[in-house]
Amino acid sequence: MGLETDSTVRTRIENIIRTSKYFQSLEIKVLELYKGKCALALAARDEHTNIHGTVHGGVLAALADSACGMALLTELAADEITVTLSLNMNYIHPAGICSLTAKSSLISRRRSTAVLEADIFDPAGNLVARANSVLAIKKIQGDK
Image (cartoon, rainbow, N blue to C red):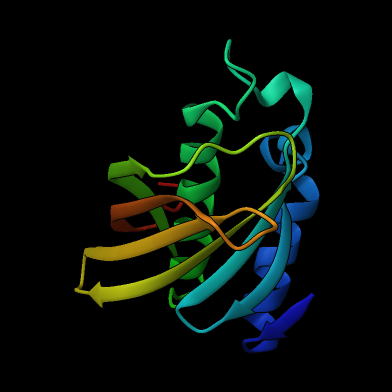
């Protein structure tokens, strides 16, 4: 995995990937992780397809949302988390059972929100979907 972030951020993200039942169930893998950028891979399986035999839009949305969240995590302090406020998907080219790659980038960050984009590609390099996302940035609430 290509990681170009400081060790604290890298450890935090590796822990999320290793312990998350969500990432385990979809078998999402981190390919690259740089400050404000992320590339994730998902090997689409038969159970990810819709009635037409192409990858379901919800699976593509999950991959894009994950890529955006991971890209933003590279920019957050240890006491900050992120949650998705909105995710807009544009489905461009159908994808069958194959390896999909989502590449995300931070576009803009304010104190409590950030805007990110993610593009999803099939192995032939076809743009399958494009996402625009707004994420909230929140402080972790300690015990009171």
